[in-house]
Amino acid sequence: MLVLAVAAGMGFAGSRPSQVDGREVFELDIYTHQTGTFTHVLGVAIAEVLNEVLPWVRAVSVESMGSIPNEQMMYDANDYKRQHTMYFGTLYNAYMGNGPFEGRRHTSSKIAFNFSLVMGGLVTTNPAVHRLQDLEGRTIGIRAGVSAAAAQFVALIESGVTTRMERLDFTAATEAILSGTVEAILPNWTAVTPDLRQWTGNPATMEFLARARHVGFIDFPIDVDRRLRSTPGGPLENFYQMVVPIPPRTVDPRQTNVWYGVMANGPFAVDQIFSEDILFELMTSLHVNKEKLTNYHPQGAFISPETMALYTYPSEFHPGAMRFYNSVGATPTSLEDFMEKLSRN
Image 1 (cartoon, one colour):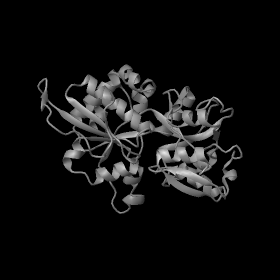
Image 2 (cartoon, one colour):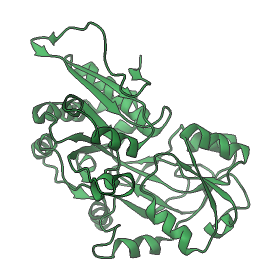
Image 3 (tube, one colour):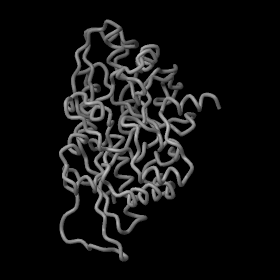
Image 4 (cartoon, one colour):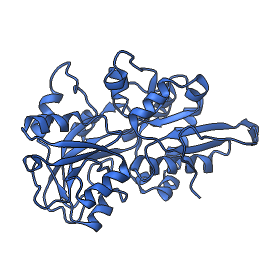
């Protein structure tokens, strides 16, 4: 049975034992994204494993509207919530003071771990759309919560293409592209193995769309990404997303050509006042019980301490996380440095 709380902030309630086997019960809310998204299903799997292997933990996966809402929630949270919450978020906007965080940077969140690598990009079900230029005058659905697609939007702007953009929730975006209301969407998240040699589609998005209708893959110019990233002191320097070539048949058996999509690492974060000892135990348990995690979610097969130790903004791990990485001999590194190292092997 999956552990799930649908309402944000629902957490635990009612009469429960305060101790198990002499240990104080630890309640943990794991805020992810909407039901059906990659991160939400993954959050449920993480909660299931922790509850199974640590009797004193009471973990629940909480649905939310996305990374920025999660970060805003933590910005306003009281100390108890900060000590009992793990959440999925980009951290970029809050750390840099962008968007809703302008003038009130939030730097107390620290990375616990990144869950392997994921990537995204523009996809379409319109057979007439093959390039960015083909989107001229068309409508694109951008999932609510997508806050870090700057390189993609710059590529659209520089292409000279005029588009209409609709911010759509996960389910609405899928329905919209199937009905033809929008011509393309940006919700594609796909897991990749630590060696970048094996990929798996997200059954809640790409595989579903591929069964319903042919899916086309729209390239992002890789030169735009590299130029933005190489600007010293620029907003995308050391950014946690990058455009990479996605091999054929990676996300759809009918994908016949290399697709230039977007790779990223997705951080689960905690506040700096989260218990160091408890975070160390949680991460150690996930690492040791990788096979159990895989039984709940296939993504468990694609993690390693090295990919868990990838960092984004802020480029700082929680002390409990560092204890874990030191214990397994993993060194935190950026996504770009990690991929460069793999390319040399």
